[in-house]
Image (cartoon, rainbow, N blue to C red; front, side, top):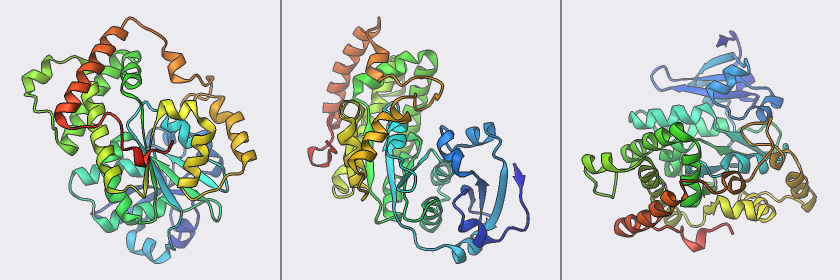
Length: 341
């Protein structure tokens, strides 16, 4: 990264191309990286890896005191929280209408905030400041929608409390589709699922009561199902506690009802999209190209998966997971009153 000297706080804070990137609670400073307007849509994610690959290396570090003095009111910040492999990147792209709604896909700062929270070093004031900085629009009146990685689910309730006007969509894949995605990714997917389970247990605890030896005896896809249940448990709890502020959605419903989903998500976020704008989204690049691989055509997850030799295993694990869910009092379906569709 290349630090740019002698830049005033009001110049950086007043220009949303300066994306907040790191927050250091010890030095009481925030580092920003310049992300030009066009790059917001070109980049798959606003994480450090993708910023580096795009050679976006100009940074400015400012003291928090100077930032607070230059920061105005935060308006129009919302979230898409998700449980992975559920078309969350697609949804974030689909609801992006520059000048009206802008999606921030996996900004690196959210990862920093989660790391600080796990170390018990994230204060409420610092969380509020960080979200306030992410909420700065490129265009006046533009609503900002943050789609963090699923590891940021640790912060769902704290983020919603820090930004009282924010709304959220809790997006997940049906269990069978989630397991199919994990299996389709081979060894990488199975290893990822085990790591996810460990992280979720560390963040939220486990209601399952399995001993370590019993967990060791379970297959990769059984562990993936347990991780899915932990996400489901958290989403159900958030939906019960914030029924007016969150809406739940599954990827199958989204892909089968694209027009209604986009309209309802925008409405939930306080944005009205005209019929022509929604039609342009449906016929535009969001649904024409793969959300994560711009050089590939978009293929609905169900069509891409097809039938495979592992389907019998997935069927059995879904039955097993239903029994585990009943024992742990985890709903397989999220509350009806908070469903988006």
